[in-house]
Length: 169
Image (cartoon, rainbow, N blue to C red; front, side, top):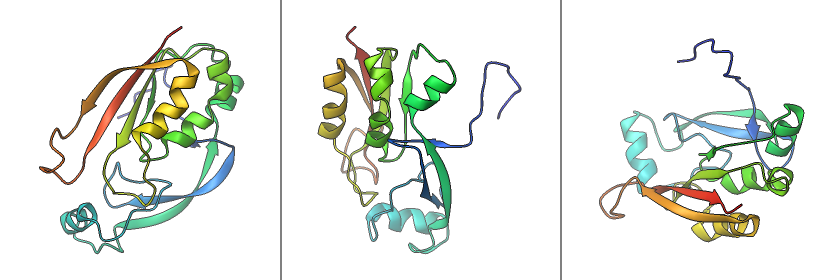
């Protein structure tokens, strides 16, 4: 719930690697909507479709065009010179968000990054831990923590983790 706190700014757009408008897949379950298409016929989709009393094909309720900006442009336009923690939970779109951070990484204004990473086959695009490392290690970030949601890959239908990085500088 949003309160009218003067320190909270709501923005009605997404962040990515470039400024554009892109199709966003809105799912029956809040928190799984993404720019990435769901992978058909997975166990995850079968279970979730049943939970929401819909078909696998009907699990995506709507496709909506969404405006995307880069974090580089957002920080520049809003005169942001320090980011304590950059939290990224974008359902497999994390690499695109980070690709839109080149200038803020060069300016060294981000102290830490927490990113979710899906280690399951929910989406057609599979983003790996290595993909995340390739983007953060060259920017002088180091891994400092991993928090898994499901500690046993075989006991649940989704396996993901929140990964925490600190800026070495």
